[in-house]
Image (cartoon, rainbow, N blue to C red):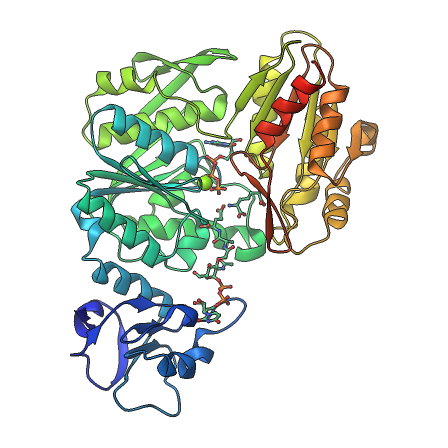
Length: 487
Ligand SMILES: CC(=O)N[C@H]1[C@@H](OP(=O)(O)OP(=O)(O)OC[C@H]2O[C@@H](n3ccc(=O)[nH]c3=O)[C@H](O)[C@@H]2O)O[C@H](CO)[C@@H](O)[C@@H]1O[C@H](C)C(=O)N[C@@H](C)C(=O)N[C@H](CCC(=O)O)C(=O)O
Ligand SMILES: Nc1ncnc2c1ncn2[C@@H]1O[C@H](COP(=O)(O)OP(=O)(O)OP(=O)(O)O)[C@@H](O)[C@H]1O
Ligand SMILES: N[C@H](CCC[C@H](N)C(=O)O)C(=O)O
Ligand SMILES: [Mg+2]
């Protein structure tokens, strides 16, 4: 039990009815979870409005209601608190409830369109190798040092975040790396967290369904930097045209990295092969098992972060060379007949272009690149034709297929991808809705030494249709199919 007034510390309150000196069992924002003595935060969502459930939670025994609009009829023995923003109240209350756990460790946030999972997971690996206890909040999983927890979101809700940060405190974790998505920032899931630093990877086309304009998407990412304290660092990619925008209003210590521009941390790619690349970072050479231009940026970002957090530079370089690929990020398998199957989470135009560019630089002869790709349902529609165009332009053969259709028609999503294909590339294109059949066709079409790229789902182990998730693992499937076809 904790007193309501302590849970509300820092929340912008506009009116109170009832006492705040009362005991609260836990904080909830979903009416279906509310039990006796809980505080319920009403949030206006995109589908429904939490305010509609106030009567129901009072009946369920809620002790306090935190809302943007006070209900007309109020019940005795229930405290009603009117706040400016339900989302902000929830974030601060979650932090207070768990004892502001972000203050007891060094929390670093990673934002950008692509590379968040890669950078945060590699930082987790790096700091583990350096001997620290480390936490991770990522699209793939949550780690409290060595203990793994499943996750559904890239940036979970404020209660989930703070609950796991508290577990990290209890386990003696010193550093935590977390992905900060634009949805997360917009819904204030990360407000009230004490960040020791933030990293910006890059900004390109995604989520324009949610944010409406690119400027709004960019400005949402910038909020993470605007809210940093003076003691934190703000690290940005100077080669991205929005890199400097992130630093415009921050109070934090500014640092930059770049491959093309002059920056505090610089890298050059000296060699690039299938099993790794040789980089020159500032004045030292570094071997990385992760390949591709975009991973040179990721490596540089983690090197810079380690330096900003005070880790020894030479030790960092040594440990970085040991880092392994993150699940579903350029994960590859070479078959008996030297067909290379690559599974990659590229689900944005920019990521798809980067991955295909990397594959094309690694081609040694006239082997073909066969790409299998789809676009998610109930997500940004405008990226579909763009991805259709990139895939057909940069591959020899493309099979359009489904990638989590959710509540949309898979046929229509594919038609929207096909609409972006240039006339001269139409002959390269095939469409097979069933993802397993699409991968199978790619395997059948592949000749010795060809390269198959299966893009969009990476580490995901399911295919989601109408709210139902069926087990589906691109890597497992492509590997099995190549062996069963005796290729
Ligand atoms: C578009 C979006 O982000 N939606 C999130 C949002 O849901 P919403 O606004 O639709 O909520 P709603 O269903 O309208 O409900 C409003 C409120 O009423 C409450 N409610 C609802 C029903 C009920 O019976 N009782 C009740 O109290 C809900 O708990 C909620 O507080 O708030 C919910 C609670 O926090 C989130 O679970 C939900 O994430 C959905 C599931 C989602 O898919 N989000 C994705 C798009 C997302 O956030 N993705 C990013 C990554 C994107 C990237 O790759 O960059 C992420 O960080 O994961
Ligand atoms: N620094 C980068 N720049 C551009 N593309 C990248 C970069 N790092 C990774 N990618 C590409 O983007 C894909 C997704 O990478 P990653 O999962 O790290 O991004 P993310 O930002 O976490 O994505 P999400 O928004 O889904 O959480 C990778 O599979 C790779 O193709
Ligand atoms: N975090 C991203 C992941 C997209 C991955 C892709 N496989 C899809 O399902 O659309 C999102 O929720 O938009
Ligand atoms: Mg991610």
